[in-house]
Image (cartoon, rainbow, N blue to C red; front, side, top):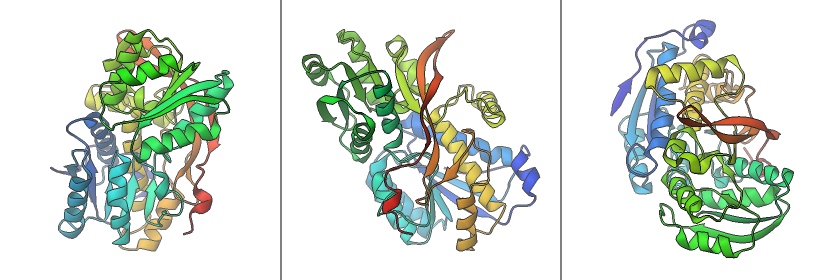
Length: 378
């Protein structure tokens, strides 16, 4: 579908920067159907909220559903680049889809702004001057989970993740910071829903804790089955399995679980408070991590549009690198490989009335940069 933003509200960004430099056409390829649809919908809704608030009528956003299939994502990217003549691409949730789309898009001179997927292959030697990740590098939240596990004395973790690029980055990231032993390590199928065999292995492993990365419906299935199993070992993981759009489906099984994230609704700054309030007003639900990433991605793009024409690639790239926007995370800056340097928090799952949500309990990693920047030669 096509959506063109309408001037319904004037944002502080537009008021502060004056007229925008020129029109920009954005191609958003994201997951809006099937497994994982909630993640793509939240990225889309956060992005479009920022566009709406900007009052900028010179940005056109073409939105297509990748169905979580790499071949579909590639077809959509080809259409957007060759037929729709987009200037910027964004929206991909899954790292295997990003690996299928991003290298070809930037090779054709298009800018790619990732609101989610951050595979290690695009952060190190495979980085590109036109590729920017506004969320994180895949390993980051898992590295923070490893640091948290150390801080509470876990010494023998059982770890598992799906068998795809982000899953491999997850376990690599956890082990990079975690100092204890690994009781067992498993890669599950992407999209798997039955975890009886994995839970049996956890039970028999002698582990004192469990770390898992299972995004979307995979995490819902695992947590429910794990809670019903009575294994009872403490669980730690990244926000992807404990975020706002997932917690209501998981329910009480997630209470007390500590997870790591670069964002939460209770980060105490004016931009975040306004974002949470306006997202609820617009969509009737609390924003998720993914919604915050979509919102920040749009505001990064709008900040660059206020400074330079997208047709002047060098100037536009410099404007993106400056990251001159107010992030809902607070401090935000890019490293030399165009991935964020940022705080990553430990959050605990709590219940507020009928709503399951998270609260920040501490900073797991401060001003954290990814491990691959030194390998990026731009």
